[in-house]
Image (tube, rainbow over all chains, first blue to last red; front, side):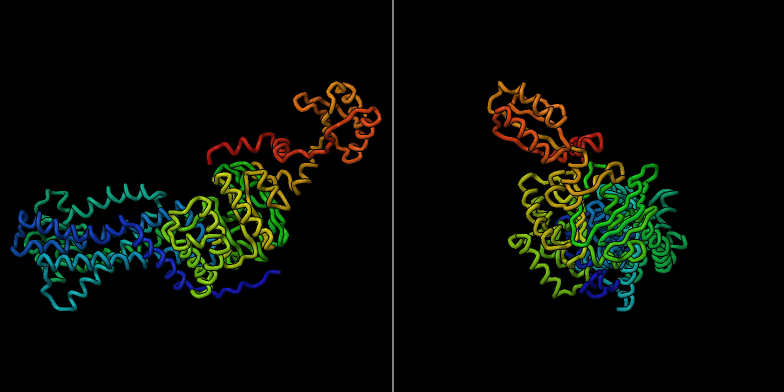
Length: 273
Length: 318
């Protein structure tokens, strides 16, 4: 009795792209989100460069502005998980996810579409910060491949943080809850690190935390890739500080390996009944 | 059958939301699931629309098993959730195009379909505005339009007018009337008796996760014997005579409604009882301004069936 629908069969990639385009439109229409992704990173670069730039000196010499950029890239990338978490929690609380689930789409499309959009949106602050950095005097001193490697590392870490965001957005039921958790967890993680200051000034336990903190290693890895001054050599022999790129890649892959399955499970459970 | 369900049960922890429901909805018919808040209506619809899996029982929608073939079911249904889940940050047109693309109509056809539906639902003027700026009624209309993007065989509307003011509700009813006329199978849930009576050919009354009565509005009213004969007297001084005669003619116990000068008696005798009353009154020379057989309202039916008023439930916060 049932007539066959005239629509074509879909595919998971096409579905994900439709969902990703939706997120890209969202970001354009939410001034506060757009500010987070554009003006805020530029402001951070300018503020830190000119406010702290004079007060903090890099122990081994070198420009604080050059030291700063690696840290500020790292901080922004870690905080990047925040947007996707809020978006997902909002979709759950408004019933948008339910609507998607009654459509004949691949179930994975909702998450992969969001993740794809998050990575694309995440490129925006990276580009703007690079430009702002160049304006205040940041320069790279390595070959093209090293620099590209640095940017690739950022995208990889951003992709990893996307899964952290999906996990948060699936576990926490309201955008407000996401906001609360994100700030209490992400602020210490990004500040107890070599993001803005050399870690060797920190007292005992905090110093150890900072040394093993992936934000520190990401900052350090980027400084190494770009040939910018870091504060590691000679001041600390912690393994992560000696091998920042490797340690950062291990972190990114570990986050993806752990958070992606957990996030998919949490999302399916949160939207199942 | 467009929808067929047997032995549906759904529990959430200790709470049994749906406690053994059987359903058979004919293709092209409009069925209203009527019940107060917490009766299990939404849980039923979520199972029928593949959003939630039944603990026990089987469901077929548009010829496909909901659990085994959810994608085939999803290609053939439209679902409007209770809170109009259209995307606030997209425009009306973008919303419809996106749904069309996710139904794999292709971009061109999705655009065409969006344009047709925007006109059909009187949203042309608002098409390029973001939905966040829509009124409640406009949002519902867009939500309904979204369910129709892929010309579904079966439509599920969960409380389509809840939360609307009376004017917007009336407007939406007019839209729903045209949908009903279009011949698509519709299952809607509602807390409003008036809505069920107006839109549906078949009503399922649910309470505490069970169907406690079903039939057309008329059948439901007849079932509780809810018919009354009402005679409005021209001369109230004849009330005592009229009371005695009407009681005798119907075998019931007539009462006098002094405010309306009316004698009222419950009866199951239908037109024959009216004829008997008319004859007795004429013979005694008692003139009436009005003599009518009146069915009970669905409110009365609901009260009789559930032991509580449907309106009382409406007052509860959602």
